[in-house]
Length: 546
Ligand SMILES: [Cu+2]
Image (cartoon, rainbow, N blue to C red):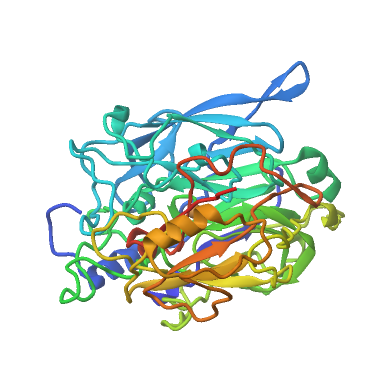
């Protein structure tokens, strides 16, 4: 089994131009199903591409898309029965796992109307004991978040802006069916996924995710990267487990029922899927390819390398190009991270190359994957094409500049500093409140924010008042009762206020105010992106105040 997690994908280098009733589910039975699936029998699919723009009289103009969420059956492997999924698409017939690849153009806004056609009941278990979107009249609550998007709060997909089929029921922050994505940020790799409070692990595992690329045609052309449908590819890697009848599996029983009947800190699937197929293969020509690799697993990290030692040339990370390409033989991808790499298959000395994963799970202290797999050799003859002369150019003009932290918080911060922010699970059952107090020990993780002031506030009311009084532009707020400044060690029972200056970083450098009211309701959220942590309450409101 471990051997199978080792290999997400096989590249074949070639020439040419072109949970139901049944036996109880055990770890062993899930492993058996995974082990029964022959690797590299399904070809890597490409998701349908949706243009997030129109062409009118030779120029690019804004457009509107309508994308629905559908229940349908999906074939994850030649030998697996069709599997029930919840997926995005322009129609039920067109819906895919993952959803359509949206292609936007930098600077051209896109409106998307998101519609929920999902049934009354979820086919996967979810946890009703934590702050969760629970419709009173049934239905699957959903809301779409565009990950890495610089978007107005009303279109950010607040976890409380959920809605059920036909908008029969909506969450407290719901305001509209149509979201507007300004696409004013750099060109880069984003992805959209469900964000309904408490439902995130189940809704993403079911398939509510897809890629969103912002392209800058002028810049992209200058960089001379592989382009076009065949040579610029999305690889969405997601680990899943399947029961004997082919159903997607998510634990309904906790790892320690004495703590909680259904909590499991992290989900790890036994099968690696890429673009909705279990261990697919991809035929490649002897030339450079651009691969945009998204780790869409709930909790699994990926340590990716190519079996014949071919290097990756990393040109971008998530939503931004790097200042210059970086060559590496191994990529580490946390859940939800996207790496954008060039692989030059003309340098391959073998006809088959396995994309390998060696990351421990849980990361970094868990089991090490090891082993080899047998019997997966496909015979593809290849002949070298004419030599690939394509040269990559540095993307210096395209890189994100860090926003200058001056003017925010305590003024001590250096550009480039990060501060760790711990998320603690709130008291059970309480909905997330702005500026929450009364954290308790328990489930926690850390994220980082750009540098700014960090203060500890001694009570919720005091905290609220202080946040409203203080402008982030003040360099050093005067100490007031109830505030200590420059806190390094955070006490878990204290509310903290993080002064940050959030400005839109412009393509080409510099920054400027957001082209929308970033302080508007319902604000934003910050959260852990190990989905099982996020679903278990590690998601908090983030409100910009001026
Ligand atoms: Cu996300």
